[in-house]
Amino acid sequence: MNMSKQRITALDYARAWAIFGMIMVNYKLAMGADGSGSYLLRMFSGIFEGRASALFVVLAGIGVSLMTAKARNSMDREVICLQRKTLYKRAAFLFVAGVLLLLTGWSADILHYYAFFMLVASVLIVAPDRVFLVMSVITLLAAQVMQISFNYGQGWNPTFHEYTGFWTVSGFIRNLLFNGFHPVFPWACFFLIGMWMGRQKWLYSGNHKKILLFAVLGTIVFELLSWGLIQWSFPVLDANSAHYLFSTKPMPPTMLYVLSSTCSAVAVIMLSFMIVERSGESRITRGFIHTGQLSLSHYLGHVLIGLGLLETVKVLDNGSLAFAIAYGCGYFLLAVIFSYWWRKKWTRGPVEWIMRKLT
Picture 1: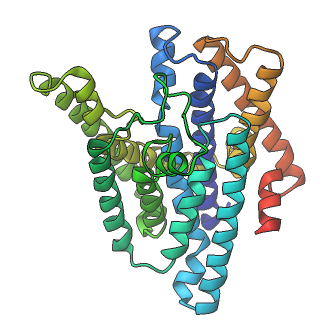
Picture 2: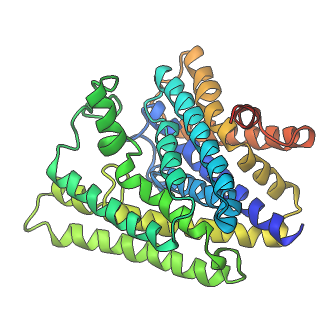
Picture 3: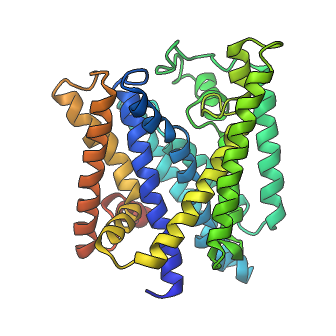
């Protein structure tokens, strides 16, 4: 495997783990198994909350940077225009796909948010590197101001599973920008950081161990800072207010959550580079790489097929965390096997092929 191909496949490998984590989180959510199960099961499933989807969005940003590298390097106006049109079309495709999932009752969709991130990317194809960092900081600070100034729970039922007024103009915009599952403020930070990372030479250098160490340390520091601030603020704030401001859970997405999840995403990406470098030709690694290459197909499939099957046989609302994890692991294993078989015959996944043809 040549070095250039190895770099791309390492990102695909990381994307497979993002899909696995999203399956774990989404199946737990869909089956209403949030508070059930043993301590170990709750710990295992909790690892992926907000982390897997953050990794998915960071990887999306890196992917867009790689896709638009030719336009950025050439500064050819015609090439830039063509790239922008492609991003517009893909944004439209993802928005429609996301809305279709929403219409099936899947309220935790990420694709319609992803479509907005694509529109942001189309404007920033040739922007200087510092613009991404500045915009990330502004987006993050704006999100924190919004969370303090407005009612974050508006529209949500007490369990945060149903959103009243979602299909109204005000409800849809509020959910998209402020208090949905992956709102633009601050989730655009992950995409912007990914676009910035995709331009950096250190991402593809041999310093993966050093970057991994810094990323892990960063995750630990922000987690400890979160814990400390929650504990120290108890004399002034009640428990709910302290967790609202300083938690590293994805809802609400605090500043510490974004910083911690960014570090954990970088750590997984660095690990993926290291694993692909060492065992990129093994069948297991190839299976994960192919799964990442079919990530859009698997994202749609884990909702329409995976959850659709459970709903058909009337066991979706079982409330069992053990079942949610076991079913998710089983579904992911089948997804890896399917991906390995599919890529022996075709170069793109079924949904990826359709998107490519239409955009």
